[in-house]
Image (cartoon, rainbow, N blue to C red):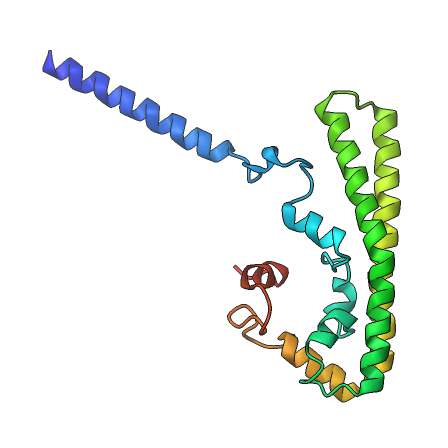
Length: 196
């Protein structure tokens, strides 16, 4: 009897272990995101879009040595901006935000509609195509606003200031993953730099 109890207990343990392993194997990396109001946007995404922040849309410029105005203004003392440069950069920044904020809000609204179409099961292939086209157009325009600003910003700076900017941002450093630049969220910096 004891022998059969041990065998049954062993089978149950193995079965339970297999269920646990299988559930871990198939568990989505999106667990918890199903509770979001807009499933495709995090709270941070929405905050960035509402406030005209970069949202990673200007990486092509930023990571190729073409700074944008936001960080330039944050480090104006370290890169020795003149008053005239600061005024031009600030004006460029305000212009960018005045264009980016409405586009960001529009993108949030379009993502909300897409989410609702799936949630209430009214989505069709035609509606999906229309909604994705609208989202793509607004996202393209928003990205253009940010990248265009990165095109203009370097024309206001000297080569030395751009070099100092890139140093302060940690670009080209061998230990970028270990030393996020001052003022950066460590987790976001590591994510943007593909740190493990």
